[in-house]
Image (cartoon, rainbow, N blue to C red; front, top):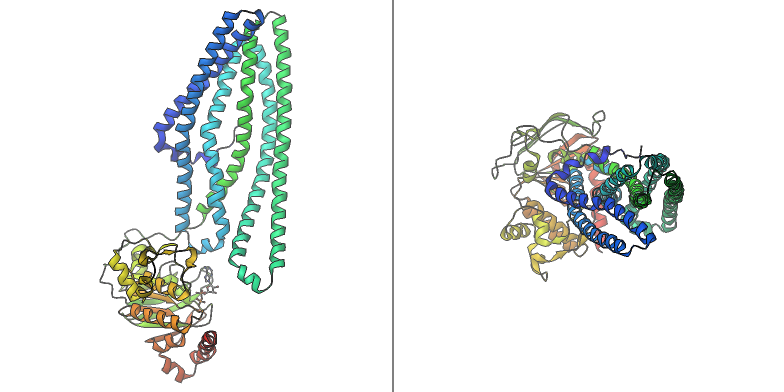
Length: 588
Ligand code: ADP
């Protein structure tokens, strides 16, 4: 019962395999360390009666021996701790790496369900806790358990009846420990859930602080926060109360047990079954049990908490990942993609029972600029997600240059279909790194991409040029600059298809013009699909598609569609004219 169920942690064993040699060396040190305990108990058996008898030479021998054994033991302990720490830390690092790797491959739907705060908590706090358990198990629990076994073996060898009496007390402790353990675990899980809810709220709150202030909603948010931290305190208090109760109870049982053993030992000496030297050794050995038992109980509790953490970490692995490439999936011939896009009766729904796109048919010739317009929720972003193969059509086919996207390697496809998102989030790092974004690119290629995006001018004017640092969330750059960096990032790999989600927020006229110039240059010679929010964009597009509730309801040029006086005209009057007007007022 005392043995923790290692189901979750057992699956981590394979991660230790590469570190066999260090583990073996550490294990050897551990054996030396543990073997010293019965030796010390034996020496105590020599020492105590010698002190009683005033036999000074014997006392000196025993003390000298004990000193030597202690020295060897402490050196072995140092070896054990240092040799085992490395592998333990590497296992927790590897675990964190794997979970993050999984996170990167999760289906977007699954990712959206998990809040950023919660995920951050899992990958930091939970991963730390699991790491701690791995470390403790290897470096503390194992030698403690070994010490328990070896010292108990020595005690049995010294006197069987006395050892039996001692052993009768052990289950009592074990039962108490496991009863508390289960309750501590449940309480710990509740308290961890609370912390992660707190983190989720914090994540939301920090992102939304300007909004909160704008609505004067601080008292409301403070109250929500107060409620959350109160729940957290309560949950934590329950755990601490249980832990507080556990230590005295277990401690008292231990003390009573030791006193009982002393009593029985005295009776054994009286009866002539035991000599005083052996009894002294026995008592010394008994005292040597306290430490490992206390370590094992503490570690057991941490183990329970760690299991809750491991479960939460592992839950990420249970989320669905992006559909992998089909076996035999092909790469596109590099450099020769023309950018012809064809949709054949494409239907798709995030929930297959509720299609978001219905039977879409579309043929976009290379180098065409196609504007997508339509009310929010019409399926414009969803169409992008199909072209990037974030999602795969349930019915119909999407073809690029005649190749079914489903037959292509997704990573290769994404090299030739590039996205300029609405919110140009660039990662922190240098400007050059933000444009390269992990792809191998020479400085000349980066500069070329920046030139195309009309970003070279402002970058060159920065104190460190392309090596200037971008702060987190690009806070030291203007909106227009970030948009141009995002355009440069998109055109770096010379993609045949550009997917552009126009920003809705208005820039000032000058910045707007700079971004537009970058876009024009970037679009030249590519097939472009743009989710349009600006009148100028739709006016200039070769073709406009009006999407409504997942269907193409109208298509044509701006003039043609305006003349027709249908959905587009309504939309245009409602949406674009208003946005233009907003842009005008925001500038003036
Ligand atoms: P648009 O870009 O035109 O505003 P979207 O493509 O974002 O429209 O959304 C189309 C529909 O699909 C909407 O009803 C939206 O609620 C739904 N939708 C979008 N993304 C998801 C998702 N990840 N999971 C489930 N439904 C989604």
